[in-house]
Image (cartoon, rainbow, N blue to C red; front, side, top):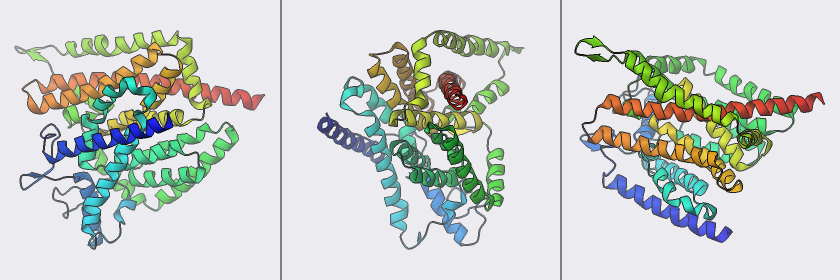
Length: 417
């Protein structure tokens, strides 16, 4: 089995590496993935380039949190200050602008493929292929967004049960982009409540002590995010804020008459009702409660990756306005689903859960393609996307809080006995 898995992993990795390379090299992904263009040509790794250009301007004395003339699109720095101290960029431009983003993407693709393509899950290989070449994955690779590094760090934190490594990676990722502070939830896997509390206390003392010295840049980053937080991404957006803005600003007028009540009927029939029925169904299933309880009880890779991924995706979805590439964190849920589906012999809920995530990636891809290449009403496409986003996120939220509640209850019961 080990040999088969390695042969399969290597084969799948090379195949997808070639497919993605050809899609980008031959411009097949454009205009589905909106390119960042310079002189009419697509600029590869544009998000990573923005960080490097901010370094160049920072070295020249510019406050890149307010202005960044070194960047072709004048994008200000929206990341942590730690990313402004990359050394010798001018001395090794090819290494920084080409080789580093390529290495980032190679590692990211390997992490994804190694999580999915295992011999025991061979019946779903065809479906996995669509996940790997979906729009969120292709976009984050084409842009070489720093979320790739966060995902790799998250994978390593889940993979290796080493406290020093965890401290280091969580602190580094938090200093890069701040939201990964939520990865500290990994310390809850310690079965000792006192030990968990000590680990969390030490971590937060370290991180807040470091961030205190960057308070000025943090304020500027926060102000810039607030100013640019309006829903502007259409089908490329992944956030609860986008859904709320859609409801808020959508006006339905037919022949001069106001029909805004239609959007509230839509919310009830296609969002609230399906979510409510799903909750009622799951609340009666003992196996579902057992699955949620075991998330923190079983300290294994799949459980750790699921908890980390769901925490990141919930924090980002409900508290930030995100571009679609942040949907990559949904992939971290899949190994846990597959493992337990196999153990429980095709459990109906887990099968439904997997296909909901699969459908979400496929739908995101179809809607982005339709938005860029058809005359279909953009508003309809955006509404459909936010609907499936909210449904899936409500399911993840329910499982997450049920598992947290079970963990706390078990911990306090053990403490009091």
